[in-house]
Length: 184
Image (cartoon, rainbow, N blue to C red):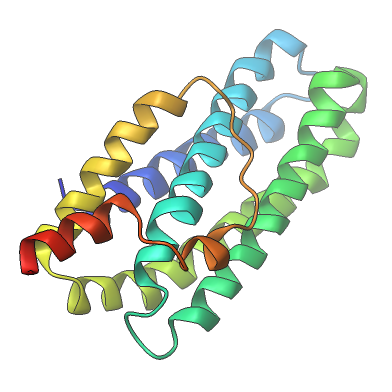
């Protein structure tokens, strides 16, 4: 499956989870832990897995594909830091301290949603169209298969990404090796 489809699918799922969390906070004044914990844990897993896949597999693949790629990837990595900081803040206030910190978590949830939307907007408007235009379909499908395989492996681990995309680009990923083998 084309990696572009998988990325958009992730974006939509994360948006939906984030909206559900925001709706819950707006509807209910006194949430109990059992009301928000499963949704927050699910959102955290999805976001961390998505960011890990982008950082480890997508960004290194596109780093040198077009002239502005490094700047866009650097911007996306900066968004990841903001996203993870906001997510960690929410989790600390709600999962570790509990429902009594609900009012303090509301701004963090809004910051998290804003960071997610900014990140997705840059990708959807600038990065993904370049990938569609400049990376052959077969290579995008190979990368999509890597995404699917890795997602299955990390789905329940709650991986927290680190900024490794730039250094990882110096070495070829599985997809680059497969694409090179097909071409040469």
